[in-house]
Amino acid sequence: MKALRKSLVVALVLVLGLSALPVFAQDYDFGGKTVTFIGWVDNLEEKEKDGTLAEAEAKFNVKIKREILPQEDYQAGLMSRLISGDSEYDVWRMTQYNPWFLSLASQDALLSITETIGDEEYYGDALEIAGAGIKAFSLGGHSYPVALFPTLHDGGASYWCLFNKDIIEEAGLPDPYDLYFAGEWTWDAMRDIGLATTIDFDNDGTIDQWGIANMYIWAFLTVSNGDNIYVEDENGRVKYNWNSENILEGLAFGHQIRYVDKIATSGFAPFEDGNAAIGFGEGWRIDFVADANKVNYGVLPLPKGPKGENTLYTGWLETYVLPANVAEPEAMIALVDFLERSDDIAGSIQTLIDDRVNKWAPDIKAARIIRETLETYGAEGELLQWALVNEETLEAYSAAVSGEKTPAEAMNSVAASGQAYIDDILGYNK
Image 1 (tube, rainbow, N blue to C red):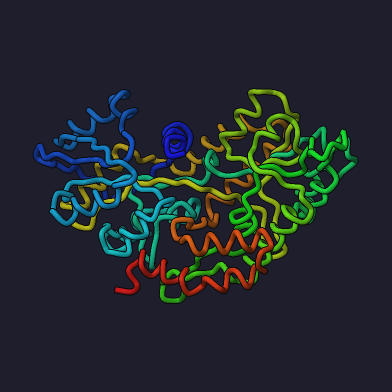
Image 2 (image 1 turned 60 degrees about the horizontal axis):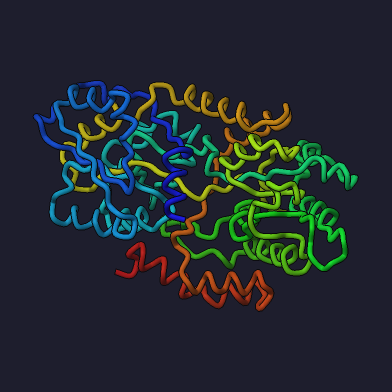
């Protein structure tokens, strides 16, 4: 799984730079010092191939070194460099999927852009048109992404809802596109499709055609119901929120469709093979569906819950951050800016969205939906911090979805341990 994520990051999860700002217009000279870019893969390989790396070394009078740390030792390795003082000229690659970012930020191990430069001064227009990516790497009122941030406008690692036009038409069901444009692409609409299209054609006790494939209850039925499994309180402290009314409603609905209705199956293969009416998959999977040309498909965002909106879910995002003890912070930021920054973020985003539309949209309706969804999600998207889920919370979630306990019983029973785990990761108990 780790290897898969690595390849997805390199090939599919694109990132955008920030609009150029005057504060970094001056030249910086490192006097021949070495700046080390650290990641779990080599993120500068393409920059070396296209000559950008050599250009940066000449422009800034600097030597750029790349160092790889294994994921299992990544946070410990970064902290070791910080404590020893070896990180003064480091640039660290970061993801929100693991606890690394939250833990390091909560320990004041990272340079706060908010404190050092100011959000408005540094991020500029990106705060409004691509704010969700910045928020993913913010904590307690401080933002940390440097030069580039994970753009949700990419959509490659975001989960979409695909539907099989032929199966739905044969069942005499409403066109999901029509439901979406009427504001009726909802959980209940999805369930109706699932009920009508889950079929054992030969009555042998085995389902031959599924209604719904690859639906992650914990993710899709929380973020699409207007809430988050973890939220910040008025003091910027993260708190356990699995027992909120909206989340519990999503878990109950997930139990209904998987264990009561029995219309949902695991894995994306049934949809790819033409044996599911609805399939949830990352954007990169749409490429494969389109190329295989086996399914007459349509594209939608997630169906919305009673209290939510049509949206997406993204599991993996990346950015660069700087350690708190970084020397010459403005020069370091300028260097990373030079390597990764775009002069026109709005134009870059539209180019990226155009590319997604051209590759993914099988029809004009899908083209409109993909464009509108990416623009909205990139600006306002809500991301789930799976890194804060402890074993007890995961077990309670499973009990809630399976029906072993009611959602309220299950998630309330681990509220204290769930919060204690957050407090430990973020250092609230120290």
